[in-house]
Length: 324
Length: 249
Ligand SMILES: Cc1cc2nc3c(=O)[nH]c(=O)nc-3n(C[C@H](O)[C@H](O)[C@H](O)COP(=O)(O)OP(=O)(O)OC[C@H]3O[C@@H](n4cnc5c(N)ncnc54)[C@H](O)[C@@H]3O)c2cc1C
Image (tube, protein in one colour):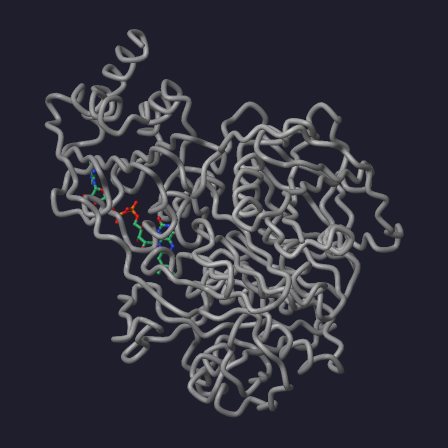
């Protein structure tokens, strides 16, 4: 019996989501009275692997094999399944990321293990194993029972938090059996912007909707994002119009985000938009229409013209940053 | 070459979600049903690829797991332009069950490319496509935001944090698609709707299988506290509230 946590790395480094996933897995292991084992695939230095101990992993299995520097869903799933079997793990934890979306379902079939994706908190019950999850994009919460002996759960981002729980992790090399022929997808090129804050990593997001009126009006919004160390986002019509890149579109059909603070400027708050942002810890809405539905989803609101309010806010946040 | 698009029949995205009295299920009476938005985009792209293929892609089929009530949604996919359809006659108990059924139903059909949406807008499982690929022992690429042919080779864009990778999969394979895969979903034309009635819709009986998961209870979301309004003439108050009350800056 044990809990196995798959830890994603990004060019050999772990991110906050990885530490959150480990923290969560360690807490479940504690509830079950067993140990939390982390699994890492790809080239990650030992001193980086050891940081997983800070969040409760007592052992780190490493497959230090450069073939895992690019994601191949089938090969990754095969090795994760081997590690689960080797450790006799009965609970497997993954993040809620696109990598988990790509790999976890395949592990589920390999191990005949039930999978619940984007779980929103700790299990409500260990027997029958019951986990909470949002459905219909936050319009309801559900309890889901996993009936198989091995259970796989993916944790929705930012729903548990990073919790320190210092253990001295031991690193163990895991000699996974996988042929080159098992890698059936080939990455031929990568396009990546550097230096920009990535939307799904951002703690603060400043977002604009059709009420911003034109692409040119984004300057103050970007300035505010700069001051707050925030990423920028937009509603669907804004990316459809080409005012902003598609990668910034949030909502049901775009990115699902869960930052600490979401500032919505000139966004009406359509149900499909809220589907992607309602997991934000705090929502601030700036809208000229006091009846806009965004105000029912927001914690703080300002009724006003975004073009007038944004410069004021920039001034106020600048002052705050200078004083704090 | 043949393409299969998996479609899920889901409540319209604007549906108000009501629970049954005992809170063990969603009350689905009076719900409008639609093709899952991502699946609709997948179908649109499949049809575009077929049209641009100069006859190389001979067929686009759709498949869904569901009972008779899913047929209007399947007919809509035919009206949009799919050539034929399958329905596996069973309630899709969970993604594992549904993926198993589809893998069984098409295992002798030799599709070269299978497309599915990255998530269903009802239970938000994000599991189906990967499970299907594993049941079929096909490679899969997920988070696909663009799909092209370069001669015989398939090139897909996979979204990664901050950008994308171009990936070449070996065929047959499963593409799990998201935003970007097609611009706008296609809408059925009058002619399409007429023709859909004549197109083959084959009903396949379900194979024996168990679900791995079960939804046992539902709750409505906690009502949110009223929004605190800040005077636009005094935005410093907002900064203060975010700092002292919400404690997030
Ligand atoms: C299947 C489906 C999926 C969808 N998925 C998404 C999705 O993922 N994400 C998404 O965002 N949408 C999605 N939509 C679209 C969604 O229904 C809305 O149309 C969209 O969110 C509206 O965008 P908006 O708020 O920017 O624009 P609008 O609804 O036009 O709202 C503009 C707002 O700006 C305010 N405003 C105007 N001028 C000013 C000013 N000077 N200062 C301040 N405020 C001002 C107005 O009062 C209004 O509230 C989807 C729709 C469908 C059918």
